[in-house]
Amino acid sequence: MKSKRNSAYAQAGVDISAADKTKEIIREIARPTFSPEVLTDIGHFGAFYNLRQFKDPVLVSSADGVGTKLKLAVLMDKHDTVGEDLVNHCVNDILCCGASPLFMLDYIGLGRLKPHKVAEVIAGMALACKKTGCALIGGETAEMPGMYKAGEYDLVGFIVGVVEKASIITGEKITEGDVALGLPSSGLHTNGYSLVRKIFGLDRDPLQLKVVHASLHRPLGDVLMEPHKCYYNELKPFLPIIKGMAHITGGGFLGNIPRILPAGLSVKIDRSAWRVPAIFNLIQKRGNISDEEMYHVFNMGIGMVVFCGHAEAARLLEALPDAKRIGSVVKADGSERVIIQ
Image (tube, rainbow, N blue to C red; front, side, top):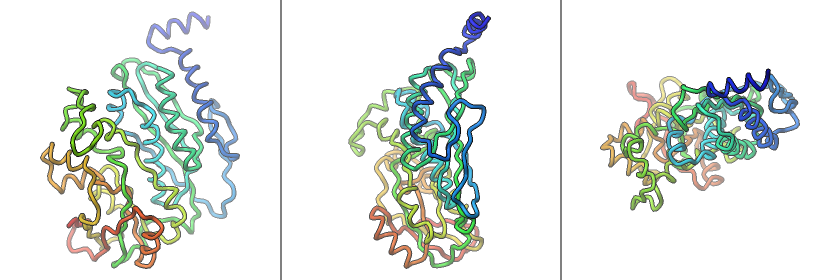
Protein backbone atom coordinates (compact mmCIF):
# COMPACT_ATOMS: atom_id res chain seq x y z
CA MET A 1 0.00 0.00 0.00
CA LYS A 2 2.73 2.47 0.96
CA SER A 3 4.81 1.78 -2.15
CA LYS A 4 1.87 2.27 -4.52
CA ARG A 5 0.74 5.41 -2.76
CA ASN A 6 4.20 6.94 -2.90
CA SER A 7 4.57 6.00 -6.56
CA ALA A 8 1.29 7.67 -7.51
CA TYR A 9 2.22 10.79 -5.54
CA ALA A 10 5.64 10.87 -7.23
CA GLN A 11 3.94 10.74 -10.62
CA ALA A 12 1.91 13.77 -9.53
CA GLY A 13 5.18 15.58 -8.84
CA VAL A 14 5.72 15.09 -5.09
CA ASP A 15 8.61 12.89 -3.96
CA ILE A 16 8.03 11.75 -0.38
CA SER A 17 11.36 9.93 -0.20
CA ALA A 18 13.17 13.14 -1.17
CA ALA A 19 11.22 14.99 1.52
CA ASP A 20 12.25 12.42 4.13
CA LYS A 21 15.88 12.69 3.05
CA THR A 22 15.69 16.47 3.23
CA LYS A 23 14.32 16.36 6.77
CA GLU A 24 17.25 14.22 7.88
CA ILE A 25 19.72 16.63 6.31
CA ILE A 26 18.00 19.64 7.91
CA ARG A 27 17.96 17.94 11.29
CA GLU A 28 21.73 17.46 11.24
CA ILE A 29 22.38 21.03 10.10
CA ALA A 30 19.98 22.66 12.59
CA ARG A 31 20.92 20.75 15.75
CA PRO A 32 24.18 22.68 16.36
CA THR A 33 22.13 25.88 16.68
CA PHE A 34 20.10 24.50 19.61
CA SER A 35 20.53 25.93 23.09
CA PRO A 36 19.53 24.11 26.32
CA GLU A 37 16.18 25.91 26.11
CA VAL A 38 15.20 23.92 22.99
CA LEU A 39 13.27 20.89 24.19
CA THR A 40 12.36 19.16 20.91
CA ASP A 41 14.18 17.89 17.86
CA ILE A 42 13.39 18.85 14.27
CA GLY A 43 10.37 16.93 12.98
CA HIS A 44 7.91 17.09 15.87
CA PHE A 45 4.45 18.61 15.29
CA GLY A 46 5.55 21.67 17.23
CA ALA A 47 8.82 23.12 18.53
CA PHE A 48 9.26 23.63 22.29
CA TYR A 49 11.31 26.44 23.76
CA ASN A 50 11.71 26.94 27.50
CA LEU A 51 11.55 30.68 28.22
CA ARG A 52 13.49 31.31 31.42
CA GLN A 53 16.00 33.63 33.06
CA PHE A 54 13.82 36.69 32.49
CA LYS A 55 12.05 38.85 35.08
CA ASP A 56 9.39 40.49 32.90
CA PRO A 57 9.85 39.12 29.39
CA VAL A 58 8.16 40.50 26.29
CA LEU A 59 8.27 38.37 23.16
CA VAL A 60 9.07 40.18 19.92
CA SER A 61 8.27 38.48 16.61
CA SER A 62 8.78 39.26 12.95
CA ALA A 63 8.44 37.60 9.54
CA ASP A 64 10.24 38.40 6.32
CA GLY A 65 11.58 37.02 3.08
CA VAL A 66 14.51 37.48 0.73
CA GLY A 67 12.46 38.85 -2.15
CA THR A 68 13.59 38.57 -5.74
CA LYS A 69 17.22 38.19 -4.68
CA LEU A 70 16.19 34.54 -4.90
CA LYS A 71 16.02 34.97 -8.68
CA LEU A 72 19.75 35.71 -8.68
CA ALA A 73 20.43 32.76 -6.39
CA VAL A 74 18.77 30.49 -8.95
CA LEU A 75 20.55 32.09 -11.92
CA MET A 76 23.93 31.71 -10.17
CA ASP A 77 23.07 28.36 -8.56
CA LYS A 78 24.26 29.77 -5.23
CA HIS A 79 21.87 29.17 -2.36
CA ASP A 80 23.76 29.40 0.95
CA THR A 81 23.99 33.19 1.20
CA VAL A 82 20.21 33.72 0.88
CA GLY A 83 19.87 31.65 4.05
CA GLU A 84 22.18 34.09 5.80
CA ASP A 85 20.22 36.99 4.30
CA LEU A 86 16.99 35.71 5.78
CA VAL A 87 18.25 35.25 9.33
CA ASN A 88 20.23 38.49 9.45
CA HIS A 89 17.30 40.51 8.12
CA CYS A 90 14.95 39.08 10.75
CA VAL A 91 17.46 39.49 13.60
CA ASN A 92 18.04 43.14 12.64
CA ASP A 93 14.31 43.82 12.63
CA ILE A 94 13.73 42.67 16.21
CA LEU A 95 17.01 44.28 17.29
CA CYS A 96 15.33 47.61 16.52
CA CYS A 97 13.00 46.83 19.44
CA GLY A 98 15.89 45.96 21.76
CA ALA A 99 15.20 42.22 21.51
CA SER A 100 17.61 39.30 21.47
CA PRO A 101 16.75 36.40 19.13
CA LEU A 102 15.50 33.17 20.68
CA PHE A 103 14.51 30.98 17.77
CA MET A 104 13.82 30.98 14.05
CA LEU A 105 11.52 29.00 11.78
CA ASP A 106 11.64 28.89 8.00
CA TYR A 107 9.35 28.12 5.09
CA ILE A 108 10.67 26.93 1.74
CA GLY A 109 8.15 26.47 -1.09
CA LEU A 110 9.33 24.91 -4.33
CA GLY A 111 8.12 23.00 -7.36
CA ARG A 112 10.52 20.09 -7.15
CA LEU A 113 12.46 19.10 -4.07
CA LYS A 114 16.23 18.83 -4.50
CA PRO A 115 17.68 17.96 -1.07
CA HIS A 116 21.18 19.29 -1.76
CA LYS A 117 19.89 22.76 -2.70
CA VAL A 118 17.61 22.93 0.32
CA ALA A 119 20.59 21.86 2.42
CA GLU A 120 22.60 24.82 1.06
CA VAL A 121 19.87 27.26 2.10
CA ILE A 122 19.56 25.73 5.56
CA ALA A 123 23.34 25.68 6.02
CA GLY A 124 23.41 29.43 5.44
CA MET A 125 20.61 29.93 7.93
CA ALA A 126 22.34 27.76 10.52
CA LEU A 127 25.59 29.68 10.11
CA ALA A 128 23.84 33.01 10.72
CA CYS A 129 21.83 31.58 13.62
CA LYS A 130 24.95 30.32 15.40
CA LYS A 131 26.57 33.74 15.13
CA THR A 132 23.67 35.36 17.01
CA GLY A 133 22.78 32.55 19.43
CA CYS A 134 19.47 31.93 17.66
CA ALA A 135 18.08 28.39 17.49
CA LEU A 136 16.90 27.16 14.10
CA ILE A 137 14.07 25.33 15.77
CA GLY A 138 11.84 24.16 12.92
CA GLY A 139 10.16 24.98 9.65
CA GLU A 140 8.38 23.66 6.59
CA THR A 141 9.58 22.51 3.18
CA ALA A 142 6.62 22.34 0.79
CA GLU A 143 6.92 20.62 -2.59
CA MET A 144 4.17 22.05 -4.82
CA PRO A 145 4.35 21.04 -8.48
CA GLY A 146 2.97 23.65 -10.83
CA MET A 147 3.32 26.54 -8.39
CA TYR A 148 6.89 27.52 -9.26
CA LYS A 149 9.00 27.62 -12.42
CA ALA A 150 11.68 24.96 -12.76
CA GLY A 151 14.46 25.54 -10.24
CA GLU A 152 12.73 28.44 -8.47
CA TYR A 153 11.64 28.56 -4.83
CA ASP A 154 10.40 30.91 -2.15
CA LEU A 155 12.02 31.46 1.23
CA VAL A 156 10.41 33.03 4.29
CA GLY A 157 11.57 33.31 7.89
CA PHE A 158 9.78 33.74 11.20
CA ILE A 159 11.73 34.89 14.24
CA VAL A 160 10.88 35.21 17.93
CA GLY A 161 13.04 37.20 20.31
CA VAL A 162 12.74 38.53 23.83
CA VAL A 163 13.36 41.76 25.71
CA GLU A 164 12.75 42.77 29.29
CA LYS A 165 9.72 45.06 29.34
CA ALA A 166 11.72 47.88 30.94
CA SER A 167 14.30 47.68 28.13
CA ILE A 168 12.01 47.87 25.10
CA ILE A 169 13.23 50.33 22.45
CA THR A 170 10.48 52.11 20.51
CA GLY A 171 12.00 55.46 19.56
CA GLU A 172 9.59 57.36 21.81
CA LYS A 173 12.52 58.80 23.80
CA ILE A 174 14.08 60.44 20.74
CA THR A 175 14.14 64.23 21.14
CA GLU A 176 15.17 67.30 19.15
CA GLY A 177 18.95 67.58 18.97
CA ASP A 178 19.64 63.86 19.18
CA VAL A 179 22.26 62.36 16.88
CA ALA A 180 21.69 59.91 14.00
CA LEU A 181 24.53 57.44 13.49
CA GLY A 182 24.82 55.21 10.42
CA LEU A 183 26.30 51.73 10.35
CA PRO A 184 27.53 50.58 6.94
CA SER A 185 25.70 48.00 4.88
CA SER A 186 27.44 45.20 3.01
CA GLY A 187 25.63 46.03 -0.22
CA LEU A 188 22.00 45.94 -1.33
CA HIS A 189 21.11 43.54 1.50
CA THR A 190 17.66 42.17 0.55
CA ASN A 191 15.76 44.92 -1.23
CA GLY A 192 15.68 46.67 -4.58
CA TYR A 193 16.41 43.55 -6.63
CA SER A 194 13.36 43.79 -8.89
CA LEU A 195 14.60 47.19 -10.06
CA VAL A 196 18.17 45.96 -10.40
CA ARG A 197 17.10 42.97 -12.47
CA LYS A 198 15.23 45.28 -14.83
CA ILE A 199 18.05 47.82 -15.15
CA PHE A 200 20.69 45.21 -16.02
CA GLY A 201 18.33 42.92 -17.96
CA LEU A 202 19.33 39.97 -15.82
CA ASP A 203 16.28 37.80 -16.55
CA ARG A 204 16.87 38.20 -20.28
CA ASP A 205 20.66 37.94 -20.16
CA PRO A 206 21.99 36.19 -17.02
CA LEU A 207 25.54 36.46 -18.37
CA GLN A 208 25.46 40.09 -17.21
CA LEU A 209 26.03 38.67 -13.72
CA LYS A 210 29.55 37.68 -14.77
CA VAL A 211 30.50 41.12 -16.09
CA VAL A 212 33.21 42.90 -14.08
CA HIS A 213 32.35 46.61 -14.11
CA ALA A 214 35.33 48.92 -13.67
CA SER A 215 33.94 50.51 -10.51
CA LEU A 216 33.17 47.17 -8.83
CA HIS A 217 36.42 45.22 -9.46
CA ARG A 218 34.57 41.89 -9.30
CA PRO A 219 31.64 40.22 -11.08
CA LEU A 220 28.29 41.99 -10.76
CA GLY A 221 26.65 38.80 -9.49
CA ASP A 222 29.12 38.49 -6.60
CA VAL A 223 28.45 42.07 -5.54
CA LEU A 224 24.67 41.64 -5.71
CA MET A 225 24.76 38.37 -3.74
CA GLU A 226 26.78 39.80 -0.84
CA PRO A 227 24.93 38.66 2.33
CA HIS A 228 22.79 41.03 4.38
CA LYS A 229 24.85 42.33 7.30
CA CYS A 230 23.75 41.57 10.86
CA TYR A 231 24.21 44.30 13.49
CA TYR A 232 23.17 42.37 16.58
CA ASN A 233 26.56 41.44 18.05
CA GLU A 234 28.10 44.90 17.68
CA LEU A 235 25.08 46.81 18.98
CA LYS A 236 23.91 44.50 21.77
CA PRO A 237 26.33 45.90 24.41
CA PHE A 238 25.07 49.43 23.75
CA LEU A 239 21.31 48.88 23.72
CA PRO A 240 20.83 50.63 27.11
CA ILE A 241 22.12 53.94 25.68
CA ILE A 242 20.27 53.75 22.34
CA LYS A 243 16.94 55.59 21.97
CA GLY A 244 15.87 54.20 18.63
CA MET A 245 17.00 52.20 15.59
CA ALA A 246 15.82 52.02 12.01
CA HIS A 247 16.73 49.03 9.86
CA ILE A 248 17.10 50.41 6.33
CA THR A 249 15.37 47.79 4.19
CA GLY A 250 12.51 48.06 1.67
CA GLY A 251 11.48 51.71 1.57
CA GLY A 252 15.02 52.96 2.14
CA PHE A 253 15.65 56.00 4.35
CA LEU A 254 12.34 57.66 3.55
CA GLY A 255 10.24 54.64 4.41
CA ASN A 256 11.99 53.26 7.48
CA ILE A 257 13.26 56.15 9.61
CA PRO A 258 9.78 57.66 10.19
CA ARG A 259 8.65 54.34 11.70
CA ILE A 260 10.48 55.12 14.95
CA LEU A 261 10.30 58.93 15.06
CA PRO A 262 7.97 60.57 17.61
CA ALA A 263 5.34 62.93 16.20
CA GLY A 264 6.59 66.44 15.45
CA LEU A 265 10.17 65.42 14.71
CA SER A 266 12.17 65.00 11.52
CA VAL A 267 15.71 63.93 10.73
CA LYS A 268 18.20 65.81 8.61
CA ILE A 269 20.57 63.42 6.85
CA ASP A 270 23.92 64.65 5.54
CA ARG A 271 24.63 62.36 2.58
CA SER A 272 28.21 63.64 2.39
CA ALA A 273 28.90 62.01 5.78
CA TRP A 274 29.65 58.62 4.21
CA ARG A 275 30.88 57.24 0.92
CA VAL A 276 28.10 55.65 -1.10
CA PRO A 277 29.33 52.23 -2.37
CA ALA A 278 30.03 51.98 -6.10
CA ILE A 279 27.21 49.52 -6.77
CA PHE A 280 24.59 52.16 -5.94
CA ASN A 281 26.23 54.74 -8.19
CA LEU A 282 26.31 52.19 -11.01
CA ILE A 283 22.63 51.36 -10.52
CA GLN A 284 21.64 55.03 -10.46
CA LYS A 285 23.60 55.84 -13.62
CA ARG A 286 22.41 52.77 -15.55
CA GLY A 287 18.79 53.29 -14.58
CA ASN A 288 18.78 57.09 -14.75
CA ILE A 289 17.21 57.15 -11.28
CA SER A 290 16.70 60.32 -9.23
CA ASP A 291 18.42 60.84 -5.89
CA GLU A 292 15.06 60.85 -4.14
CA GLU A 293 14.08 57.47 -5.55
CA MET A 294 17.48 55.96 -4.75
CA TYR A 295 17.08 56.89 -1.09
CA HIS A 296 13.50 55.58 -1.16
CA VAL A 297 14.46 52.18 -2.57
CA PHE A 298 18.00 51.35 -1.45
CA ASN A 299 20.04 51.60 1.75
CA MET A 300 22.77 53.56 -0.12
CA GLY A 301 25.48 52.04 2.06
CA ILE A 302 23.81 52.53 5.46
CA GLY A 303 22.10 49.42 6.81
CA MET A 304 21.14 50.62 10.30
CA VAL A 305 20.49 54.10 11.69
CA VAL A 306 20.94 54.53 15.44
CA PHE A 307 19.55 57.46 17.47
CA CYS A 308 21.06 58.61 20.75
CA GLY A 309 22.20 61.67 22.70
CA HIS A 310 25.48 63.50 22.03
CA ALA A 311 27.48 61.90 24.85
CA GLU A 312 26.24 58.45 23.90
CA ALA A 313 27.04 59.12 20.24
CA ALA A 314 30.65 59.89 21.14
CA ARG A 315 30.87 56.61 23.02
CA LEU A 316 29.41 54.64 20.14
CA LEU A 317 31.65 56.28 17.55
CA GLU A 318 34.69 55.35 19.62
CA ALA A 319 33.56 51.75 20.07
CA LEU A 320 32.31 51.25 16.50
CA PRO A 321 34.96 52.65 14.15
CA ASP A 322 32.85 51.98 11.03
CA ALA A 323 29.93 54.05 12.32
CA LYS A 324 29.40 57.56 10.97
CA ARG A 325 27.54 60.57 12.30
CA ILE A 326 25.08 61.07 9.46
CA GLY A 327 22.46 63.46 10.81
CA SER A 328 20.47 65.03 13.60
CA VAL A 329 16.91 65.21 14.88
CA VAL A 330 15.07 68.49 14.31
CA LYS A 331 11.55 69.83 14.75
CA ALA A 332 9.33 68.84 11.87
CA ASP A 333 8.56 71.67 9.47
CA GLY A 334 5.71 70.33 7.40
CA SER A 335 5.13 66.71 6.42
CA GLU A 336 8.70 65.82 5.45
CA ARG A 337 10.09 63.44 8.10
CA VAL A 338 13.44 62.66 6.46
CA ILE A 339 15.38 65.52 4.87
CA ILE A 340 18.40 64.38 2.84
CA GLN A 341 20.84 67.17 2.04
